Image 1 (tube, rainbow, N blue to C red):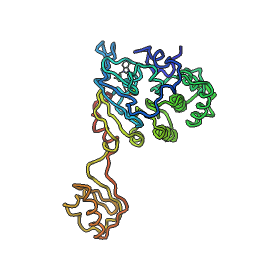
Image 2: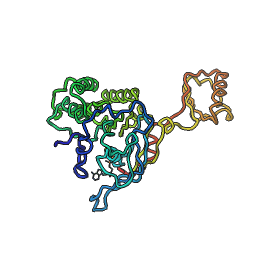
Image 3: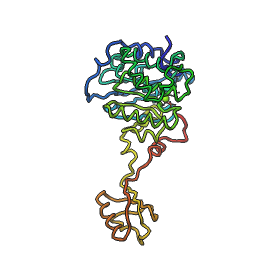
Image 4: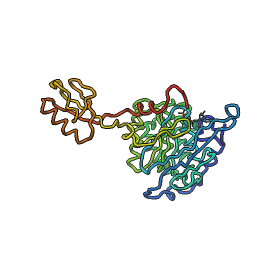
Length: 347
Ligand SMILES: Nc1ncnc2c1ncn2[C@@H]1O[C@H](COP(=O)(O)OP(=O)(O)OP(=O)(O)O)[C@@H](O)[C@H]1O
Ligand SMILES: [Mg+2]
């Protein structure tokens, strides 16, 4: 059988891809859906994985005891440099690869449970969809493999092809698609069975800026519909905008997990914009410490949020006007670069 969505090189490690993920029982998907659930859509407990028979027999230790838990309804980003282990973790979670130790759970059941995987949609990294299929054919195949009825598949395929801007190309073979077009139908096939958890490995890879924004919108819509999404990506600015939480993975280990907003916050520093040219002195140190000052921008550090009122009163009393006041943030990229030692190259 031609492997659907088989990532490059999957043969090197496992033939289980088709047997376990795509040949799941053809029972009704809806049967396995619970209405609402507080169970983690995905949980990884101390996953370790070494690829044997490479690097002169020593093997590559891709995951070293990784533990993670996704919350229902969140958009979670898995970040890390090339070779960090992101794709390996996803493959273990989908039982495409077996871990050496540890266990993954999907919706509270072992990831090896084929029924549970019916609730998961997956866009593999570097996918190679069966070349003879058209875009619509790919969606039909994925739908059937998930136990959907033909009329249901066709309805949903129309919607999704439209949603990813591929309706015009629906009858064209995938081999004729550009990289970005193949990626768009790849996202559509991941959503065909209305999964509760969507795992997208490098979803915007090869997609143009307009398409990237559309993908971001689709992911936000999934969240609004109560779905959970796990994204592997290097596009940190996009991740920062879309994700609720992220984990930074490096050399097979989780360096940090947390809310994007908490990770990017810089203590009690605030940026004010307005007209500050009238100021003849800095604010008193017991109110705020000025870190940067220009006619239109003032950056301060305060000892507590309560001081902000005192600061704005002080500024106004001296004739300054304030247009905006926001907490100063790092970009996710800055946080990431700080965590990862740039000099050491791929994980
Ligand atoms: N099939 C394989 N056989 C041998 N080694 C592999 C295989 N797949 C991955 N590896 C190795 O495992 C490590 C983790 O790779 P993985 O693909 O999980 O990283 P990644 O974080 O997804 O990287 P990228 O950002 O480049 O996609 C790397 O050192 C890689 O060389
Ligand atoms: Mg990868």
